[in-house]
Length: 258
Image 1 (cartoon, rainbow, N blue to C red):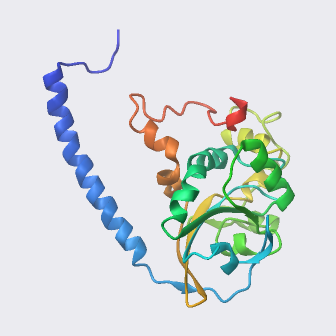
Image 2: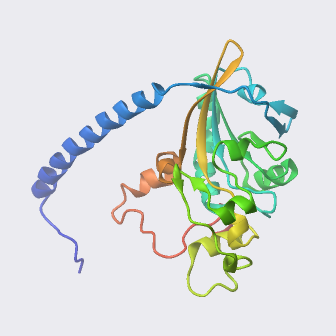
């Protein structure tokens, strides 16, 4: 027998209507936050960034593909990874089909990672994705937008999601799922990318927005960590499921490994 509260249809309707008022308040609050995002000051980008793409070397302006807006998912796939981060892959599974619809709204959506283009394209083919993916390995784009770090920065303590993190201890080096003591999800995720914990965590997830006016590119917005929840389509479904996110133990995988 379930230990959850049960009731009549009438009791359910009364509770549901009360919850509906809170949902409407949250929707209105979300609309207001979206407007505040759009009202943030734009920061002109004069630095020259170069990317490797399927059509050749490109500038940041080239990535707009003729549109006025660019949304970037900072996909965790570092130069030493053997494959992409599984949680980033789950997010990509959700936005892959949105690319064509966003294009119809004057928005280009793409992923950018530090791994060589050949690795990105091979993984993209394996996963069956169609979104554009660029390599930023020849520039410091990831570092400048807070999602890529050097070993030296890691040892000193990085700043991610607008917060400072303590220095990473050397004792973490080389530890993956095979030799970690206990059930550590970071080590397990690192193992899925073929790396150890320090190498894996030198890449971080995020999303950034850019706009172009009169040939000038501006940075308008970036978000990281839990700020990506709203872009993770699977979570929107789970938050409406009876047991919620149900995150017990290590649950994410590349979709072809379930």
